[in-house]
Image (cartoon, rainbow, N blue to C red; front, side, top):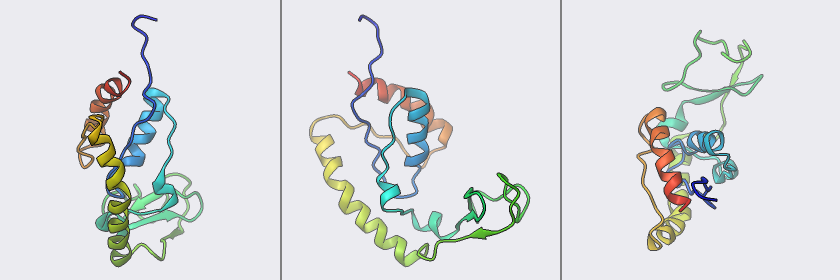
Length: 145
């Protein structure tokens, strides 16, 4: 069918934990109907700065961070109005450094595989969500070729 948009077989989003891969995966789901399979869900990790301050509403699970995402009203969940928050016991700098090392060891082989076949595009995941979202359509279109 001429002019029909095809969907890539896979889009790999490697990067350090907490870089925003999950956010961009949700955008790819919304914008292109792709399925999100997250290794991060299996091996919960994030960058040291981002992990050390994260916490969640104990009632609804809405995620927050001491520096990057605070509730609109201090101590009150934006999602459900709850006032109890919780932190994971393993969200500390030492554990995060170990996770980052393990993440690099786990992601280096698939990145090298993709580079060797010329199927890798780079996006600065530390950019704004909006700027990254603007870059995704061209990358997805190129991956579908």
